[in-house]
Image 1 (cartoon, chains in turn red, purple):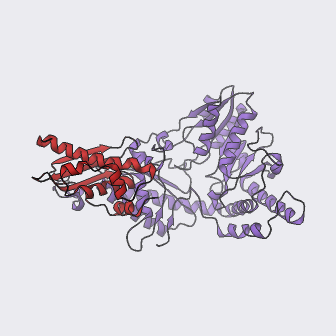
Image 2: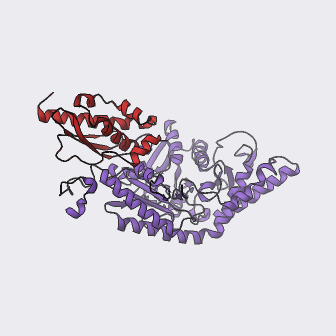
Length: 125
Length: 413
Ligand code: FES
């Protein structure tokens, strides 16, 4: 029921773990089924995401979307990264089954939260 | 891909090759309808009657009390709605438990919407209800008590005979869904003191799409379906002859080998349970240790989610590895995004229900396969826990400051 891309990211997740001394942390929970995702980012002087990692407790789609969103965000400026929508993540994975679309919220929301956290710590807006 | 290891036998079993053999001629050689009088029909009639006898022998029933259906779901619907309708003038109260299969729960819910009242007795932490609780719940307007014999998810076996004694004494019809027990543990309708009993062939190495309702003579139920005069005018529709023949063969095989099979399965089951409890921290066995189906293992594994366990086991990446097929009660696979109501009924916390995995054995599984499954499961759990943002949070903050990837926090802490 999952695309090959989803299975690939589920089985070989990219950027799994925690960034050391993160500049921003985003943790979100999925109220619907109880899954949790945590994103940590390292941001350089140009406000680019230098490093990003995730940890996720959740279904196959939740893990794959987490992995994909880190891949998409890495190297982007904060402004660019904020533009990553749940739909973009799902599309990049070759689509998700309809009942799994909500899982990709987790990924884009986690990223946004990490960026917010960075901004609040660094006083920029 | 290497041979899969099938550990989802509570969902369905592999049709036994002997059963398949016996069914074959009834598709394209001897395809007459048992309802007709010419020779090809008469032999089909004889074949289904032989199957009926085999099933009757397995469950200690009278052949005249067995009605073939399309499976246990139909049998449950018939038993529950048919009894409710037939006895509506007597009362409209039904008793069941809060840990039932949807095939029993949903007919009850349907009746609830149509003016019946249903009491859902809470099961205890092991999934059991007591005869006393049933006795206390029976009222003057109670017309039916209905529940599973063996629970499909957690494997708990209810004290049906003792509950049957209560319903008998109080004059209330008692229906038992025996889909998980027939062919696996002794089921004798006289001993169980029930009035109606549902079963399904594919749960004990028979074909899918066929089952039966056993109905004690004199029990009042309205038919679910209306049509021709088949099954003593109580269950219309041209007989599924190959399926019924297959059900009969499966019943015959079960009668011969049930005892030795159960012994073997209990050994493998306990081997898996012990292996998991020794090999993994922070797990919980769901269901009862003693009152348990021979083939059921169900654990909650803290800090991870069931679908990801199931996917990891069924799509292994390592060269030469065997897929392992299991099931889970996680919210993420339920469609409704709610965790299994059965695990919640036991009092399992939502997070633990989330990480549940069910392994159900068949007589074809071996000790070597169990070793393989344990080893694979341990790897999968370790990997998923290393990805989990909540497992052992705080307790084992990485002391070395390394990436969690390469850091054995347990050792460091
Ligand atoms: S995270 Fe629960 S369904 Fe995907």
